[in-house]
Image 1 (cartoon, helix red, strand yellow):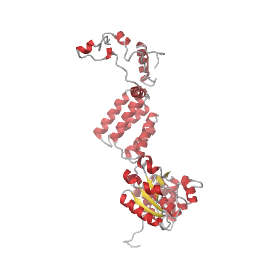
Image 2 (cartoon, rainbow, N blue to C red):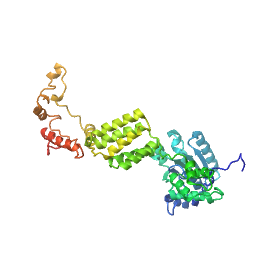
Image 3 (cartoon, rainbow, N blue to C red):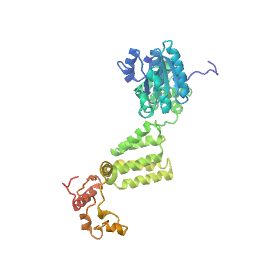
Length: 428
């Protein structure tokens, strides 16, 4: 090794050489588990490996190819195209003539568009290529159904802190690792926690920290790691899982949960205005008339975010989220609106009673439009006695709850329902 021939990064040097060296993924590689059974049979079908970064997708694909004695062709969907797939097919055809199988490994397969993914289909279907695709994105959304149906999807999990720590200890003792470097136990514990299951990031950080101090200290780990940003792909599944967790924490009146998921989104780089719009939606959907002030507060929070930006406007979002979590809950308007939409979409278009119709012309008045309409402010009792739906139609769309301010609404609603002759027993 010279200045012009530097060693490979620690994460590359420590790649497992056998399946037995793989850290984690015991749900796939333990006794009787899916990949263990596949390797035992010697027959490997096409696979989609779905999991977060740094959990060993590429390594596992290489090891599987070695275990079944197949030729391994690695491609990255970031840089490869249909031309590269054709070249892989040509090579696979040549090797098949020698009786050797070929595994095509396509990293970040979700970056291939539909046409590029379709180019793989006939060769996977014929068995010329065994495809192993790796992705951090949900294959349900990012991989064509036709390709998914020809490949088994296996979910890889983030490594547990104790598994990451074991890997770090291996890096300090393995001949391929950091020779002569030691680390304080507290430093390894810290890094195992900060890495959030990403083995590559853990090893890279340890390698940098080893250049800052020996033994490696917690301070060296903190400096080498840099600012800790929570995991979130702004265009991926994690983003929508986080907004779902925030919404459900608000709905469940769990203040700490709501604040935590909000902080994860903000620190992860989510657009504050997007979050503000979702918070406004929560106020309308889950608080509703139980606290009509909630919607106003959330609109004000949105305006504050737009006016101040981040980070100053983030406090307004936090205030709104705390208010929503503490507020009484009602989805009565949300349910009533869905009922109204379903009634319109699934039923016939009910005729508008003549007395409710607009009558701007003499001809329309002759036709009876607007005839007999009782104007509430002139004739309140008559107003209540007239129909606002066709005769005999009772939809029963809205039903208030007894939560918060809506308890007062419920009392008013019952009185109005009785005044309109739509009390109990009128049907729906």
